[in-house]
Amino acid sequence: MAHWVDSKSVGGVSEVTLLTPIKQGTVPGETRTYEQRLGDELTSVQRRIELGRPTPIGRIPSIHFARWLIVVPGHYLHYDQDGKVAGHVYRSWLLFTSNFDGDMKGYLNDFSTFLADDVDRIWGNCEGYPPDGSRNFDAYWAYAKKHQLTTQAFYNGYPGVTVARVHELASFRQLFDAFVAATRLPDGSSIENLPAAFDRFLARTSAFPQHFPARGGTYEANRQPLKSES
Image (tube, rainbow, N blue to C red; front, side, top):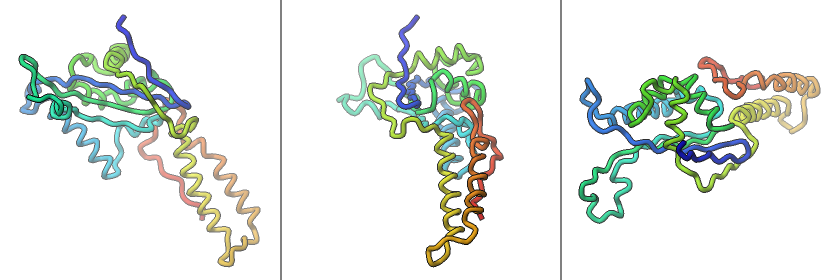
C-alpha cells in the first residue's frame, strides 16, 4: 500500500491539502478545456458566495475554511530562467485546502454523502478521479489520500470550538445585546420586571442546541436565523 500522509489536528480541528493534476485537452462534446470548465465551476461557486446565495459546501456544518485554487505554470515557474525544460510539458493543478471539525475520513464522507454531484463537477476535471465519482467512497478516499500533501505546521486559533458552536455563540451574543438594550432605561437603570425578562431570555437561549446540527448533519436550506429579543 502506498504511504499516505496524515492530517494534523489541533483542538478538535483538522486540516487537509490536496494537489490534483488537471486533465489536459478539450472536454468531449465541448469547446472548453478541462481547466476552463473547472474555472467556470469555481467561479460560479464564488459568485454565489459573494451574492450571499446558498452554496452546496455551505450545507456541511463542520467546515471552518475551504479554498480551491487553480495553479497554472506561470505561478510556479518564476525561478526557471527559460520557463521550460526540454521535453517536459508543464501542467495546471487544482489546489484544495480546508480546515474542519473532526477527522478527514468523516469530513470526506460528508462530501460523498451530501455533495457527491458538486464534488464530481469539480474534481471530475482532474486526472485519476474515480470513474464512479465520489459516491464510490473507497475509491474517492484513496484518490484524496494519494494526492494529499503533508502540512508541516498547523495552527488553530480557537481550540475546542466547533463551527456549530461559533454560530451558536454569534447568535447568543446578538440576542444578549438585544436583551440588554431592552432591559436598560435611558438613565442606565434596569426595568422593573428584569427578573422575569431574564427568565424569558434564559428559556429562549437554552433551546440553542436544536438549531445547530450534530456532526455529519447538514444545515437546512430554509433555516431561518433567530430573531432578536423584542
